[in-house]
Every structure is written in structure tokens, then in C-alpha cells.
Length: 325
Image (cartoon, rainbow, N blue to C red):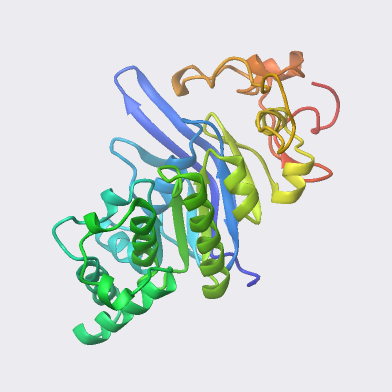
């Protein structure tokens, strides 16, 4: 692993101005990913996971914009690049894998044509060299008979195989970083396991940094090295996967872990976190989780905690920030 992280996000804030004022969708998000490392970003829908990925890729939907903070790729700032320069960074230096492979693939062109075009767009190769590389990539992501399949169209592949093609596309220009947003959600469980194992292997072999966005703690446990837990547009816990899964320090992370059934255990009903995440335009004062938290006290309702080191991770909770909640 390199000393310098491939990706550094520092105090990122994303705002959406509207008729009734500005909504802050992300606030004070700071994270880093090293070469060959997979960082899992987890949380409920609307927590800000995909928004963080979109901000890094320069794909925020307008009028959303980065209002504060910095995003650095290999030490170089990319959040303030003009669109035409950011387009060169996307694909070449940052690859993307999305939930639905059909949105990433053009139904009118063979997968070989799409791979070859992406390769030639970013790397100095002739048509025939790009074609050879396309077949190699299909083999690398585990597609059988790649020299025949390279001529097939997206509809001729199953969902799991299409997602492998999308991973091949993301890897085509040998990027330093891959943002994978819910890459296994649309697939059945046995295929999910194959795709996460594939991502992990390719990441380690190529030394690629991966940000894996998911709502599924099981996928995180199988795939990631570290995990960042998000809630209401903020990071609330970050640490090594085995530590956070074994001894979560934030009450929300504990709730997420308690809602996963243990293998072989027979339970009448699963634990759940009562209530729902607040809307971004109605985040309560203090800690955003306090209305749903069984451990909250007066301080939690007034002051917002910052991330502080705990025994096993870094957590934004007054239980760890010295003194009581």
C-alpha cells in the first residue's frame, strides 16, 4: 500500500439551493482510500452514500454543487476542474460501476465495440490492439469463451454476466479508483457473491482503490477492508471492517448490525431501528440520529458530535466524546 492515499475527501459539503432555501445534502464528509484498498460506504437510502460517489465523479445533478471542501485524486485536486477536464478524469483515472448494468451499456453496439471504444478513448492503442485488450478484459472478469462473446450484444448476456462486462468497462483504462454504487443489488445472492469476490480480486491484483457504496452490511463484511457508516448526509463511524462489525461504537451502527440475522439462529423477529431517517430539510438539532437513539441524552439534542477516536474505530457520538450524552 502507498503512504499517500489515492483518494482524499476533505470536509465535503454538497448543497441544493431551492425556492425555500438551501438544503445541505452532505456535510463535513472526510474519507480516504489507499491503493488496493476497498472502502465500504454503508447506510439507509438517502444517507448520502451515492451523493458522495456522484460528487467524486463530478456527476452531481444540478442545481446540486460542492459548496465546501476538497476532493483529491493522487494528491491533485479534482473538485474544481472544468467539465471538459473532468470528463478526461472519468473513465481514465476513475472508473464507475452502477447498480443497473443496462444503464452503462449501449444496446445497439456489441460489448467488444463498447470496450474497444473506451480503451481507445483513454489509451494510445490501435483498433486491433484495443480489440485484443477487450478480449483479455472479458477473460479477466470471468466471461467464458471471451473471443466469441466479444461480438455479442448486451441483451445476449444474463444480468450477472452483464455486470461483469460493466466491471470490464470500468477497468478498461486501468483507473486508479473505482466507484462501485450498489453493484450487486439487482443480482441474486449466489451471483452477488461471485461479483463481490471478483471485485475484491481485481482490486488487489491491480492495486486499484475502490469505494463500494451499498446498504448491505453482508456485502461490506465479504468485500471491504474498512467501512464508513453514513447517516443523514454525515459520516458517523469509520474503521476497519472486522472491528466495526465486531464492536460497533455508534448506536446507529449497532442497530444496523442487530438487524442482520445470525446464520443458524432461529429468531421470532429481527431487531429494527424504530422511526426513519429525517428528510434533509428537516434534520433535527444536535445529533441527527437522536430521535431514534435509545442512548440519547440532553446533549445529543442540542450539540452535534464530531468524529472522535474510540477503542475500535472513529465515531461521532457523545458517548465517546468525553462525558455523557
